[in-house]
Amino acid sequence: MPTYRDEAVILRTHKLGEADRIVTMLSRRNGKIRAVAKGVRRTSSKFGSRLEPFMVADVQLYQGRSLDIVQQAESLGAYGSEIAAHYERFTSASAMVETADRLNDSEATPEQYLLLVGGLRALSRGEHAPRSILDSYLLRVMALSGWAPSLSDCARCGAPGPHRSFVVQLGGLVCGNCAPAGSPRVAEPTLDLLRSLIRGEWDAVDAAPGADSAAASGLVSAYTQFHLERGIRSLAQISGSDREGIR
Image 1 (cartoon, rainbow, N blue to C red):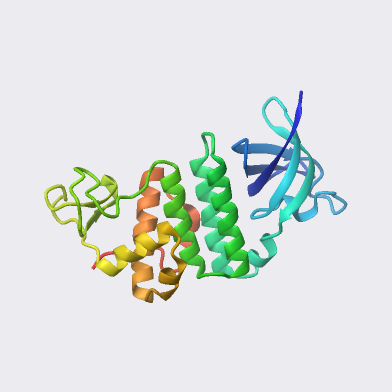
Image 2 (cartoon, rainbow, N blue to C red; image 1 turned 90 degrees about the vertical axis):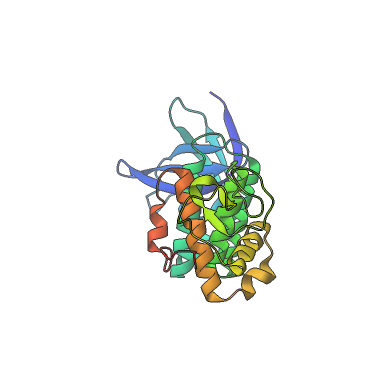
């Protein structure tokens, strides 16, 4: 069977036997890969920390029947130690890789891989608030996966905005005619922040008041978990992730 090379982000690992691990990766060209790293838990392992979560590596794999075999791994982005040293960075990174793992049960795109790498790099460097990096990643990866929230026109009938009612079950902002009774209304500064997060407008994101950031985070969390049809366990560890984005 053939061997192949690819760039990959390590999403998670599981112990296998006494010295091996099963490594789940999101790769640039081959989507999600599950492979066995033999002997990686031994102190003499040639892979060392290259196959730990949040790391980016150039890997060579041998194609197996059910699980591939990692033959080589060279580090491309050693983000794990800087992320693990800060609780907020770690919890945000954990939510990002968990989301990537959930989304990519089907074939992933190179854009999804690059978005995750960019998010982990930004977290490791402390470029912005960790929760803001996470929220931007969640909105953008949902958009890449075909679930972009409507933040201008009505998500149901297409009526042009502005609208204030945000209904996660309907896909974002909805007009007064489409909004169910009792639908939450979102403050305009929070909507502006959501738009900045999905566009990567970091000057506006970094300048946003804490109350608006918390409100936006609540909406992003609710929207992502609803459309994934299951919760993201790592979000429960993030301070303020259960705050509602309504006023």
